[in-house]
Length: 152
Image (cartoon, rainbow, N blue to C red):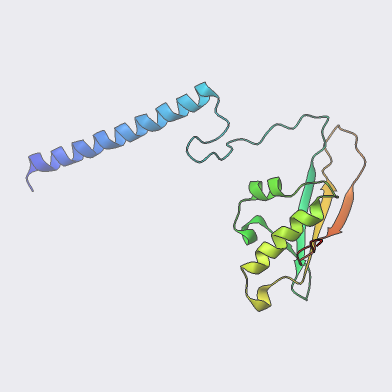
């Protein structure tokens, strides 16, 4: 390889890196200017939604057993992200057993015999916010792992 060919190769790489860097900067400026709330190509939220101070958020966690000790199930156990699991699990005690039961059945469908869940519970707790008075709330509901019967 001659010196001229080597310099031409290095120069073309520098231009390519400069173009990629410039495109990245332009994309970030466009995101800021357009005030985008989600990534344009994947529709994944970039920022968590702001929760006003007067609203007290709830946290829902899933606890399961395979016949032994209870353990916490995470979003990754279901093959989804934490934000998606948070969106799927409502804090409403009346609706939660059906929703978490569906998740448990989905989990069992993808796992063989010994890895299947034999019990599933959802625990709803109210998150205390500094300076916002609220009553403590901590409830646990059973999640049915058998499908509900349909009336005939």
